[in-house]
Length: 279
Image 1 (cartoon, rainbow, N blue to C red):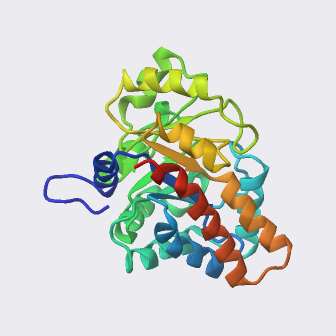
Image 2: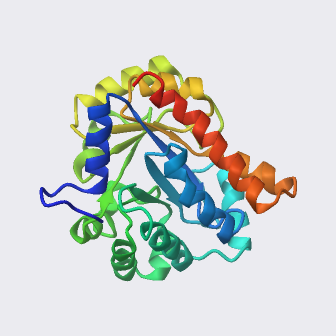
């Protein structure tokens, strides 16, 4: 994780820059290796120019239980194409050779990390240029497993808060969180319903009263209008399933690599208008 002389990480610097620009950030999620390593690599390389301020890169897993059908299918496509955790870290390393500013957060489940070896994974992830981790199936009670070692290794560990996280639980969620807080705008799995803006605003007021960390809002965000609305109250907006759906449709239609990459990046450019139009 790149850290400046003042102790700030890439995520810190990016949120500082967004605050100075007076706008929210756009966080885009893709699954590493979907639909294959080369296309995924090309989409990853093009995301910053298309308007992504922060990138979440999914670590494919055979049983992604918190994800909806779109991201589950993307994991299956990636695994079928031969994607591994090592290849995912290699993708980050290749990205860093060209871009040393855009933060990359790996998102996924603990099982592949456990099999890889947690200590080895943290060292390799840091060396590859990973900035943070979101591991959705490790609760705060398991912080000794990965969260605390990750923080010690210089990686941000980002937690999810949900509409059902009560005040007592929120304290545990926030205790060792760094980088930003990911607010899940709907109850349930990813990409299945649209967020309720009134509920999002209320939830963000509650979160902001408990933490100084930036808050990114995701799950169910599919349109530029939703990006614009959430960007007015949150520090960042996360789009995942909608982007993964674009990749899936191109793959199912038998589109070539260039067309798949262009379609994905064109969609990100449209979404970026939602956070940049008023800045």
